Amino acid sequence: MSKQKSTTILVIIFVLQMFPGKISAQFFALPSEILDTANVSVNYTITWKQDKNNLGIIRSEDMLLFVGKSVSLFMSKNQYKVLLIGREAESEGRLMDLLNREEIKNYVSRFSYRIYKNYPTGQITYMDKIIPTYFQYSEPLDVFQWQLADSSTTIGDFKANCAYTVYGGRRWVAWYTTDIPISDGPYKFRGLPGLIIRLYDDQKHYVFEMEKLERYEEGVPIELIDRDWVETNRTDFLKAQENLKRDIVNRAQEAGVDVEGQQQAARNAAKKNNPIEF
Image 1 (spheres, rainbow, N blue to C red):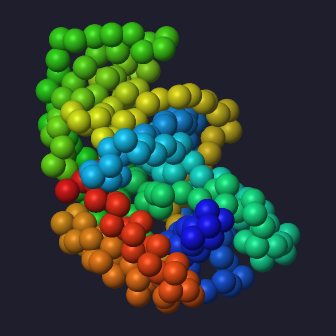
Image 2: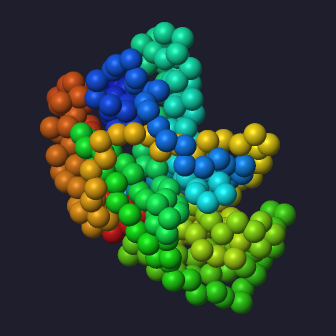
């Protein structure tokens, strides 16, 4: 299969994963609730090894943490960017043109989840789509039991201290800086005396690095998009993800992918055997 065709399949699955199955007048501009306003955003790069049988292949993507006064949101940077350009195109009547352009391939993300911290109060809420269902589940905000270490180092312009925790079947090492008094970090992680600027599991299969911190005078809205969310729990959600990989051929077929594409999707799914959480 050509690289172009593989990318096209990724785009199809990406659009189905992020947005409703039918294109309508509200494809991007769905009803939403403003939970908070972020005056700070943190750009992280995640590098990860998705295939335990081929650890030499390392993937990378940019992620964003929006920090409000009481609520924060962690999501893919590409997902955020395509939402903005999609809303603009939709308002100008250019939606189909955008979806048919090569440009949309630049915004493909392997992460469609949104993670809200302290929403509702005292909870971490994880939201994602496993085709065709939108799921959400919550965990306690204090789910991380951190062990502070005496180690310190300098990362970029910041003095950083070390801490350890165990979560999702992995032992994690976090480097945080009290120079940025934000008790938050990448993915679900939070709860240290400063911003987490580097985070990795002890095998370094998943590594998060802070690249940039931006402040906004007017602020960026932290939105909760209104969908028919199905309430579940973390364990059942992870099981549903595994079931998707086993049923990927049928899901690709439903998306209109041909037989060759279905087989490629199955091979790709088989390589995703090293999830961030077990």
